Image 1 (cartoon, protein in one colour):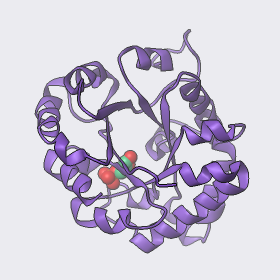
Image 2 (cartoon, helix red, strand yellow; image 1 turned 30 degrees about the vertical axis):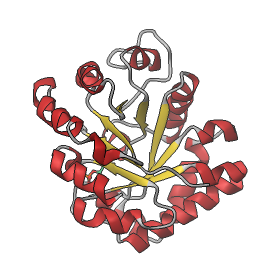
Image 3 (cartoon, rainbow, N blue to C red; image 1 turned 180 degrees about the horizontal axis):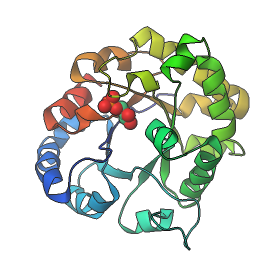
Length: 250
Ligand code: 13P
């Protein structure tokens, strides 16, 4: 089955509501270039409602960068899936390496957030990937195997089918050091095999995105790989020309 390419921009902690306006306007002006590709932008929480409003009626989807596992309650600083749904958000990034590295995110919390997202109809984009130390130690496959086993634990095949996985080697994030298409494809193929073993044939329908210094100049060769079904873009998603260039590469 053909998997539809997804290009998602992770704005991280960048762009105020005002600063996002020219970027969103530039993307809206070029939605014709998005035919055949799914496109999403993931602004900070404070900009979600404004970006949803600004992209209404376009094919651009809006995602959040995190979601809490409870529906409501005494969880200062957190945001629930229902709150995201209410403002028109359709997808959510879960378990980004920056959250794992700086905010204590674990595979167990990833799993809890993932269940909450799926339970409320959000499309989760679950991030996994190894550090440079782990890669150099030959641990890449063991690391992603563990992240998949624990992060996706207990999901049904139907739920996996509504999920997106993002392979983001930590050493390639924001470093300008992209994984080669062959390095990325090797892990993506391994990942799809893990999903097939655990969930069966639905693995062929799951989109596995690559993330880590994806740019207009390297996007096409990465996206041409058999098991790379899109990109999760950080820095290059903050500039309309770069983001559109990656979409063109798809
Ligand atoms: P960069 O594209 O800036 O390397 O960031 C990738 C990323 O972390 C996307 O989630």
